[in-house]
Length: 229
Image (cartoon, rainbow, N blue to C red; front, side, top):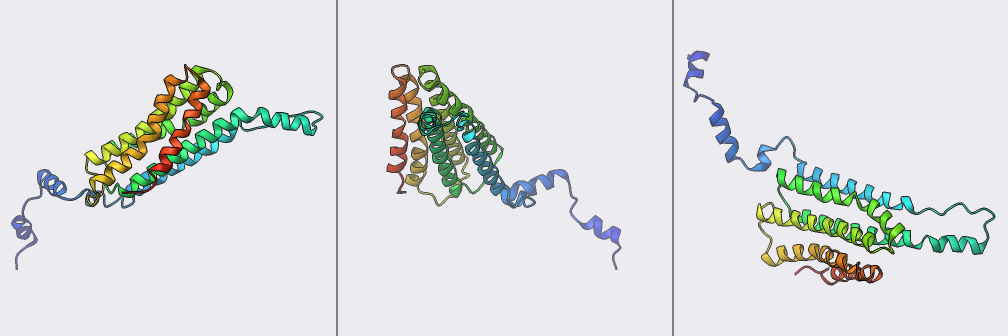
């Protein structure tokens, strides 16, 4: 009967190099078997951040105290709230568009790496700035510079979303079953609103009101490309 010492000597020696080779041959999901919900955690965290950003948009929606209020003074105060409500509505709609785009992307993203996490954090960085940008637009929306700053902020959020998709495709983190037309569709639909806001930024120095009206094109583009190929 062989001793324990003999059986150990007969085994192939276990080295760091061999361990690294074995791990390199394993798929990413197997290497991170201790984190079976890693991709889901990215999505859950993103959803939570976006939900908080949308909630914070309502901070500036507050009627002032009216002493001896009448129907006339109440309606006047309500009308004075229109710029803040307009900024809230636009920001809510744009965040909703990009939340839908984010959700659509992660339907097809089946793997992840550090780069994907980093770009996703950049996207969320621009998302959480939306309450500030909405406050700027609500208070100073008649100014060209304020309208341009708002448009640039929303375009950066959009382009970071597009970059997230491009990175996922280039790194082959998306489902291999995706057709080229579907890959283009997801990218183009995500880029539509970003392009609209980027173009409206210089337009704001011609007319802030014209730039703000042009933002309706983002909703039109989103509606036009709502069907997948």
